[in-house]
Image (cartoon, rainbow, N blue to C red; front, side, top):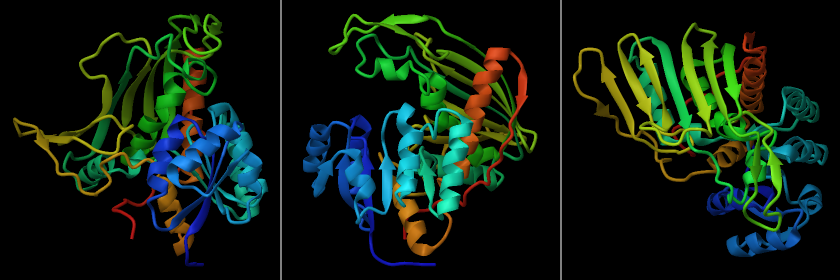
Length: 364
């Protein structure tokens, strides 16, 4: 069923990432941001004033607001499932930042609650809708590299410094290099290669404790709750395999971020999938030089929030949205399976599947 008119949106979570979302969401004509909400109402009021949003207050304001149809959940990872379930219980569609939840059981509860209520859930990242990844996907689908066979993804950094303002969050359950950055890489791989079939992994924590050096709790000793280096071999349903590294323990690297897909007739290389743009490089087996491919959609800048706008368009047009809950749940399933496989040092199957969304060329 189609509908007309803008969709009212309430943002819950007025932290750092909310600025990027609000910059874009307040510019989309079919998205009407009505409320910014946060556990700290003053922070919500500041963001609302900065972006011209008419109302602000605690989360309950967004959950109960009659003009809010869709809640954008930008809370910390530990609160994602709770806030998403509360929004669904209040009769709202939901878009949630990554990770979808802290484990697949909580993720399934969200999907089941949405299905039972006839509501939609979308999940970050939406960078796969960007020009870089969409261009790389088209090259693969057009056969520029032949049949995809193997690949490599790298996220290698020194990790957050001791004076990082979000150090405690980044080292807690639901974060670390796998849970914080893995969704970008794993979601991108689903666009190229489809559903995952199994994983083999190892992991380690270089420093089990850290001392917080900034903020009101400076001097506090923190327990590192997640592996800070994870290596995995990912197998796909169609037989392709990818080697992936997610690390906060690399002092320096010549290729710190990126994805390479190797096919029977060539290679395509994509820059950091946490970004929306390029460059995208391709090279055939019989070609001596790399070719930089022109980006094929306009979404190459910082378009964070385009997934919400695409979801709003899907609500209006009565079709499936691309950054779906089944896609987000599959990626969550992969991350949890990698985490467990790393603990056990073994190969484990992936129990879920997802359907690749249609290519994205832009909003109508």
